[in-house]
Length: 75
Image 1 (spheres, rainbow, N blue to C red):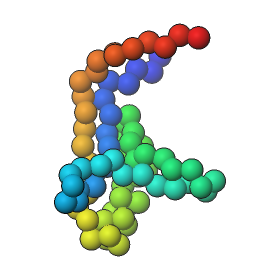
Image 2: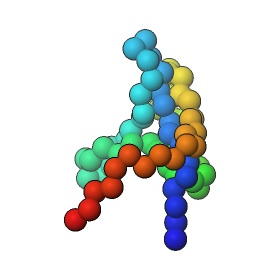
Image 3: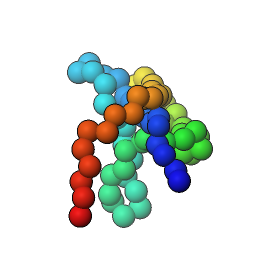
């Protein structure tokens, strides 16, 4: 069974602080640039590099590794 124990996020930096980056999918829906493994990070990296190049903004890849269950929502 898959268990998510760490998350990775591409984060943009601007004068107001940090924010998780996102991209628009083919259907027009926005998706956050996050992943639970390096395979997903590797898929997102070229997009993050292109956004950094075209926007001139610094982008960081952050790793979050402390798992804490805050709530369980049951049907």
